[in-house]
Length: 144
Image (cartoon, rainbow, N blue to C red):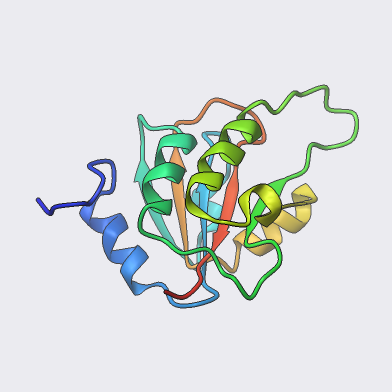
């Protein structure tokens, strides 16, 4: 055990967060995201039984968002024709606002296909049991 490390952060996840450098990206994926196949060239960390918000909150306690990128947080846009609400995005905005002075101005959205393309180049993907749809979030690491 270590002081100051959120208990939801496993030793494996802590190691990955430490290994990541400026500009590296990590995906916190919902339960429907194809983490294993998308992350063939990444480190895939299983966080079964956990949702995205609690992991996002814990990670942002340790992880600086990139200040050299306008939108270091990316969300997957809802596909046209999908009648899906995304109230979880409001939860993300609240969490992110606690840790970055730019508040929700750091959040951008990209198409589903662009999100998957970007995720294929991520350093790591965290597979969660999040049930909310369009709950995937990608973070780009900054500097301290």
